[in-house]
Image 1 (cartoon, rainbow, N blue to C red):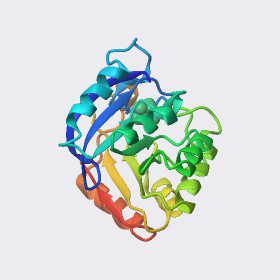
Image 2 (image 1 turned 60 degrees about the horizontal axis):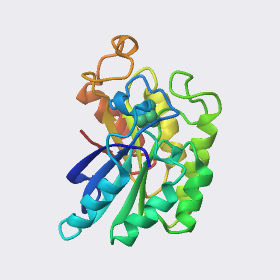
Image 3 (image 1 turned 120 degrees about the vertical axis):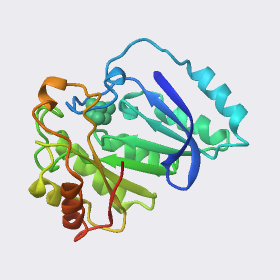
Length: 228
Ligand code: SF4
């Protein structure tokens, strides 16, 4: 695993569980508002896998979950094996993903190697913008969404509210696609640290009233919650 960092203790990242968060390096998307720009390109290995596992071995009494976030964890060829190691230590495993690898997601679910998943929905899945991902990724994200909806795996959806990718129309399309009992978390993009500051400088952070308006729109289809 190419790991880029570790949050030792979080009460926010895994619903209901005190968890550690591991960040993988590398991403196949280029969201201009990405607030982890240091993780999306490969920069060697600042955190060795064995060091992370040793830390987790020592913290088992205090932590119940491990969140694997990114970057995009599904780019890691040994992700399944790593999830197995974490579960072997007694941890529940949450996967944060951009949804671009539905096949791997289905495999992890089928083999029960993850216990919770959070799927990012960055725009209307029928038309993912080129600034976010290469052509056709929306189709893969939609496939991942449907895999989660059909599964018994506890999950959530997440949308970063960032113009020009999310507006009332695309937000409603996202909510309609995700419709069901799983929640959709709406999080405003943060302008202080982004991948493409020039691009995002044209788009202010969404106002609280706009977030509430989007929440009301999404609530027609699923439980929508503003986070952050
Ligand atoms: S926000 Fe976009 S670019 Fe950044 S890690 Fe997530 S999917 Fe990759």
